[in-house]
Amino acid sequence: MSSITYNGHDFSPYVAAELVEPAGHGLSPRTLAVPGRPGAVLLGSELPPRVLRVRLFLDAGVALSAEERSEIRHELYAWLAAPGGGELELPGEPGLAWRDAVVTDVTDWDSLFEGGSCEVAFTCFDPVAYGDAKSSAATLLTVGGTWRTWPVATLTALAGTSVKVTDELGRYVLVERAFSAGDKVVMDFADETVTVDGEDAVADVAVESTFFPLEPGAHTLTFSGCSAHAVEWAERWL
Image (tube, rainbow, N blue to C red; front, side, top):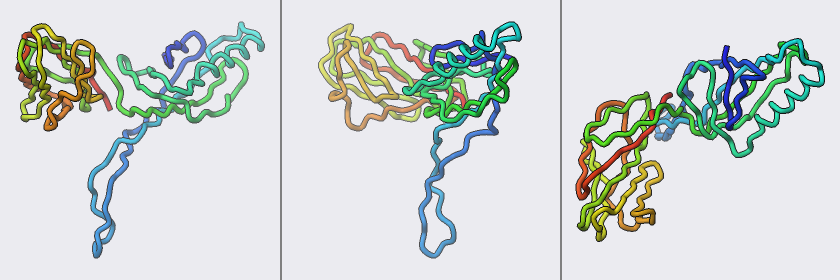
């Protein structure tokens, strides 16, 4: 049985951990009441924050004194108290991390002696796990994972008046301004921001632009107004 890593702290020297695996994501439906119709019309659903429960097993051994075990528990309490949240890595989920995780519930230790255990609930306000980071300088991308991800595109501009990234569905991000050859253009599709040589260029993004996500699967992107490009993304897993 392995342990957890939370907010930069490796718990494995002190506790083993076991994920109390949820069956799946509970969704938050959006509905509209319609006069004369029972119930409501389902408009869609959203992914709410996800609660992950982990059982911690004190693994200090009988060689430690009661005072030493108390010191360990209090150090664990401090590690779990992260008001600003942190990144969480769980046992049985190699290569995956949940971000913006906050401890929102804990149970009592079932024993204050060796082998004691308790359960900790982490609320992940970003409910989709992050997997491997990927990068490609090709036009054909294959995105893994089970959930859409948001890319970051870096382009080396040609001398001209625009740079553009378009996907196979016709969605695009177009930046219009006077470019010098070699200008570095960074498009962050998650934050819907664009910089040129490190300076904010959101005002130069055409109003009809769409910062599109990449669903799992194959994608063909077209790049114009640039001499080189690279796309970075992280696999996302439900």
